[in-house]
Amino acid sequence: MTEAIAATARWQSCAIVEIATRTQAIKSFFLSLSEPFDYRAGQHVDVRLTASNGYTSVRSYSIASAPSDSKVIELAIGRLPDGEVSPFFHDVAQVGDTIELRGPLGGHFLWPGPVNKPVLLIGAGSGVVPLMAMIRYRKAGGEPVPVALLLSSRTWGDVPFRDELFELERSLPDFALALALTREPATRRTDFSRRIDCRMVTDVAGRLPASPGCAFVCGSNAFADIAADAALALGLEAGAIKTERYGA
Image (cartoon, rainbow, N blue to C red):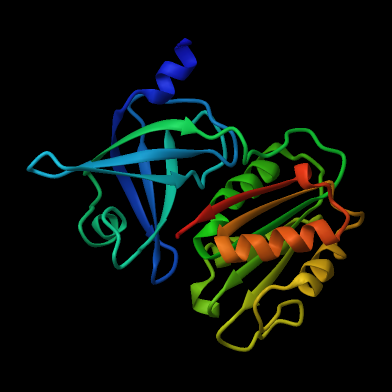
């Protein structure tokens, strides 16, 4: 086992230094790493909780922050009512608490590095988290690659990182944003009032200055299937479409 692989497999204790509410169901937890690590946009970490009787529960969460030299990373965690880990974060965890994690993990769902073709991002709910890491990384690095994000949420109030995304839309000429609201009418001309479909993905991809060279999809199984099929219909090769899925 190499030193780098050993480091990702090692559990470390991290302190919660800030908590931010993103939506009613999603909160961001900023963790100070006791052993800082390098990571790539799109990677995740494992989080482990241990009960007083020794029972442990482990869950994987994508890193929302862009790769940097900071020792603080952001995890945006959606609350699952029947979950074992997310209710602890939403209902119990406070600034100053310590959390065990290991990582970074994942070598498939990664920002492609220097690219010369536009990138299409498609997410649903908390599935936007690794995509936010990519968008933030692309902004911080000043890489002039056009990016389009299609984000599905139930309502306007359920859009994670909404204000930040709108600011990016205003400030970056090569970033296109479209929301798909499934339970209320859209109020912006550039958004949609239905679940995603092939026609919608084609519309958003058409807002890029050229056909996308790759696509990243993150959401439930059903969502990812629809989005990936729509990306294939754009003419992308299967290997250029990366998916991450959550839930049953």
